[in-house]
Length: 100
Image (tube, rainbow, N blue to C red; front, side, top):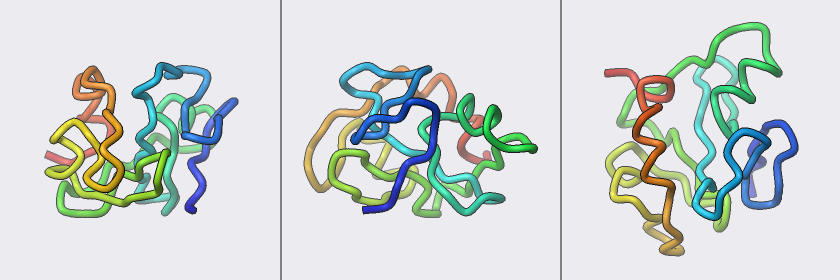
């Protein structure tokens, strides 16, 4: 399965900043070409700000099963493959992860 990069990341992609039961989505940085647990982890570990993806890209990965998905699939609130719920409060940060 593709690794989710971050600070103190567990097996499902939860990090030091977001570690609740539904904080399992890794987000794609287009500059790094990698999934990160959150933009805060990315910005602490890299020398540039998080570079958001287009909403049509497979810019999200489920930390439970590894399913990659675009914004529309992610925005349903759960993984289309394993059904695990995503944190609905992540919508507050979508401008960090997706280009408008």
